[in-house]
Length: 54
Image (cartoon, rainbow, N blue to C red; front, top):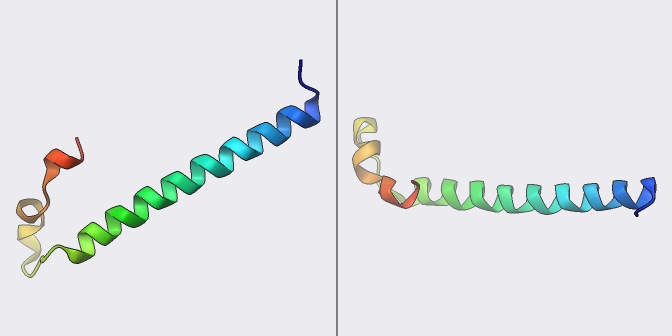
């Protein structure tokens, strides 16, 4: 088995990797929002292609 220290290091590594991919996902989502023309706020739903997210 792994020692307590090895388990902690692995958990931290996994957390960093998960955080990095989450941050990348959020950044790309925000970029998508920023590049979408949303002149009237009521059109946000229409201008986003929700099929890509679900």
